[in-house]
Length: 190
Image (tube, rainbow, N blue to C red; front, top):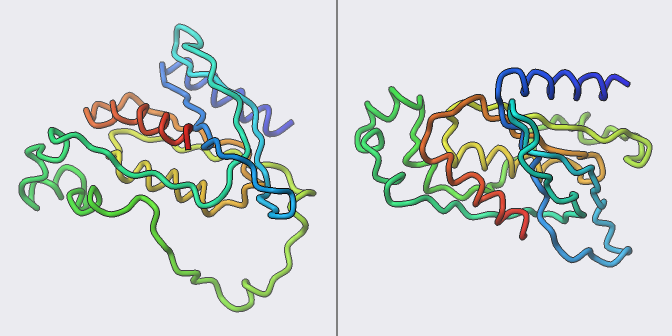
């Protein structure tokens, strides 16, 4: 019941503020044999929503396997924007080295920094736990960091516990975010 109320509240907020709710489709890949234990993920389908109502129905989510990979494809216009020409302008606008971020791979290895006690802890079987929804709200987030965040969620969350990922754009004005849909299509195609 709590999840239903939370989902309704987010949907209502998004419609009232003319936000786009975009469930991120998990990449479609041929399922591995049952013995491989991919921790298959199935989640409900969603819709792109604006204040005028649903734009279109998105396909049902499918089983995904790890790792989920995607390469960043930015246009020459994005890579040569004036704010990337000097460190001062780049750090003033973005607060970090976006030029470097645009050239790093989206999927990166992160060391496991948990304490030994945490690593030894035994968790309940995933089958008995509820699925989680991950909500990423962004405003003028550069495409490289947004996609790196998304791939981090997909690759570091146990597939059997990840129910859906919602990307909510809060009226971004960055031109490069027009490329988000094509990247999500490629992610869907797997």
